[in-house]
Amino acid sequence: MSASELTPLTSDVSIRPCGTREEFEQCVELQKVVWGYSNLDVVPASIFIVASRTGGHVVGAFQGGTLVGFALGFCSVRKDGLYVHSHMVAVDPKHQDCGVGRALKLQQREECLRNGMRFIEWTFDPLELKNARFNILRLGAIVRRYVPNLYGVTSSRLHGNLPTDRLVAEWQLDSPRVRAILDKKPYRPAQHAKRINVPVTIGEMKQTDLAAARLVQERVQKEFGQLFEYGYAVTYFELREEVASYVLEPYED
Image (cartoon, rainbow, N blue to C red; front, side, top):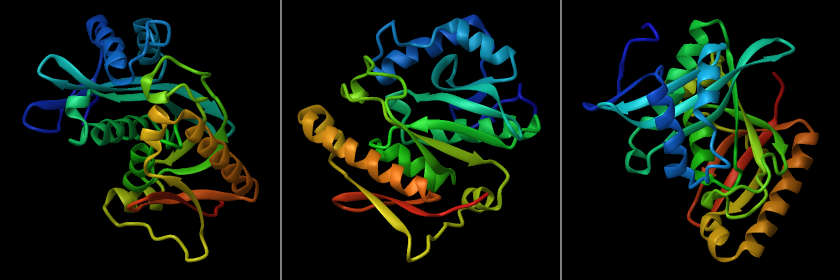
C-alpha cells in the first residue's frame, strides 16, 4: 500500500499521511484538546512540516475532513543506522479506546519498514498505566532506559505538575517478538522476573495528593535505575485490581 492510500479503520475513520498546512494546524489544535497544553508548550505547525519533509512522518486519523488523531515522527540516527523517534501520538478523547492509536502506530511501522528502517523509539510516562500496557503488551515494545524530568514541568493537566520522568520504549519492528505479539501470540515472562509496582490509583493521586504521587515517582525512578543498571529490560506488564506491575528480565539484543 502506498503512503497516499487510505487505510480503513472503521466505516468513517481512515489513516493517511498529513500533507497540507490546514492538516498540520489541526495537529496543533488537537494537542490542546488531548493534553491541555498552553500555546507555549504545543509543537507548532512548522515543525510538523519539517518532519514530513526530512525523512520523518506525520500520520493522521481522519473522520471525513476532521483530524481525530495523529502521530509525529522524526528521522534520527544511531550507531547502527537510521530510525524514527516518535515524538507524539494524540487521539481525540471522543475517539480513544476505539483502535485509533493502534492504527496510527501500525501505520508508523509500515512507513518505516517500507523505507528500510526497522526501529522506532518513543518516550512515555511510567505513571500512565494505560499507555504502558498498550506499548508493552499490544505493540511489543521493550524498555531499558529511564530519563528523569525529560521535558521539565509543563502546562499539561495530565502531567499533574510532576517532573516529566519518562521511560524510553524500543520497538524493534521486524523482530520475532514484535511479529508474534502483533499476531496476537502473547509473550510470557520467566518466573524469576522482577517487578516494579505502581498503584492503579496513581492517576487520581496526581490530581488529589501530589506529594504522595511524587513519592511513588521517586521510588519507581530508583527501582528502574537499579534494574536497568544490571541489564534488565521491561518485557511485560500486568494490571491487577489494586496494582500494576512492570515485569523485567535480563535482556540482550
